[in-house]
Structure formats: structure tokens, C-alpha cells
Amino acid sequence: MYENITRYIDAFDSWGDVREPGRVIAGFLRDLNEVADHSYADTLARHGLEWSAASMSRADLTDAPAELAVALLTAAYRADHFSNGILENKFIPSGLASRCLRRLRELDSQSQGLDD
Image 1 (cartoon, rainbow, N blue to C red):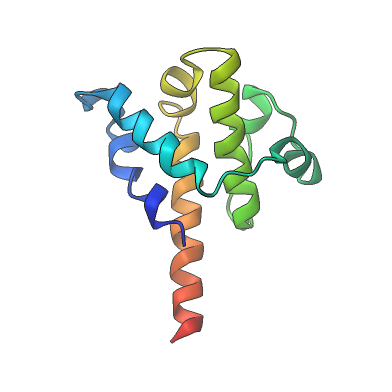
Image 2: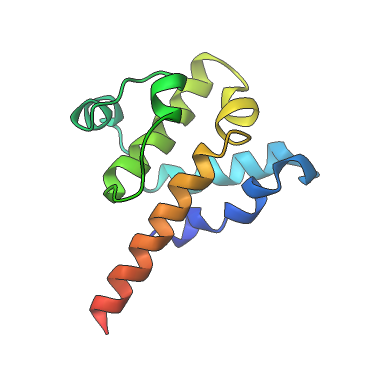
């Protein structure tokens, strides 16, 4: 279900080596828009998080539902709208984006196992 965005894990994990970060981010945001949580602030609040870089960065995704991972990614995208570059310079390098994407990939794998 989330393959279109989880395919960015490798790029985000080696972010310092990405040659065209603007192109990677543009593609990621286009793909994220297909699954974005437009009520991300409410979703974050339900999970005890605030819409701030500090709160979002501390999110425990160990057993998190997909809605939280998607809300965190959407919130990071929206934060970039207000603070240009925070996605590229904070949320990707800190590992938050990759952690969210890995959780979504894990959930996809679990659901595929149930579909068999």
C-alpha cells in the first residue's frame, strides 16, 4: 500500500550522497500526497505528540499504526512549507523520515502475510 513512498528509504538513508536532493524531495512529496493525512495535527495529538520538530523527532514508531507514520511524514512536509528546508535539513538527516517509511514498509509486509 505504501510502496510508492517506502522506495525513498535508501535515498534518505544516504542523504549526504544524494546528487539531486531537490528532485528526490519533489518526487517524494508528489508520492506522499497520494496517502497524506490532511488531519495530521489531530492524528499527532491522538498519539500524544505536538506539531513541532522536537516532539515529532521523539516519536516512538516501534508499534505505531500506519496513521501515525503517515501523519508524521505529512506534518514534516507541511512544516517545510512554513520553514523552507526543514524537511531536507532536519527531518531527513535526523532519520525521522526513514523511520516512518521503515514502519510503513513493515506494516505492508505484515498485511501481505495476512493476505496470503
